[in-house]
Amino acid sequence: NTEPAFRIAYAGGKSFCQPYAANASSAFASTTRYGQRFYPDRSLKLTNISVVLRRDSTTVNAALAVREWSTKLLLSTSAIASSAMSTTNRTLSFKLYPPVRLNPGTPYYFEVSRSSGTGNLYVNRQDTVGAGSYSWGGTNSCCIYSSNGGTTWVDQVHMDIGFTASGP
Image (tube, rainbow, N blue to C red; front, side, top):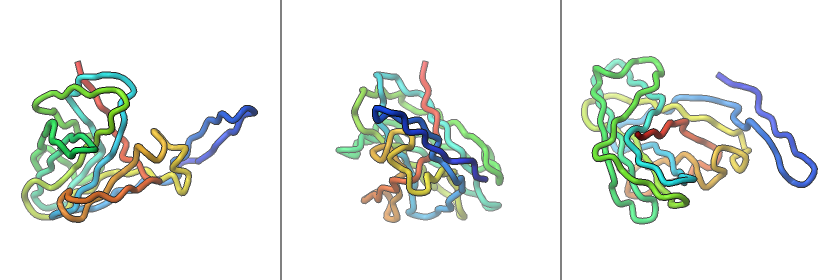
């Protein structure tokens, strides 16, 4: 699952690119979490976040939380039951409750975790293969990883979790 990666550098310093060269599903269970830090470019009321996710053959439920990056303040949550997930990659929409107002330029993140059950979830991530500064949002908006239930996060600056944020 790869696609060509390229960057066109124009005179004057601007560029155009498609830096994603690899696409893979990463397994996680127990206290492991994957997420994406992002900065909205305008004010928006967020009611849904969609991500590509799958489960293994066991019964495992998924949760998604939206938080403010600097304070880790929980803004909204959602959950999807194992019965609504597939064992193949599929875009799943997490309906947020309550809907949340996001401010432009403020860093936020969402995290995906296993809420209950056994087994693994797999989140789809795109790899820039070293070109993270040219990816969506640059290296400030990137995939994040926690192995301790979200207490601490590690930036994966060359990775992104593709997602769609939507509202009314």
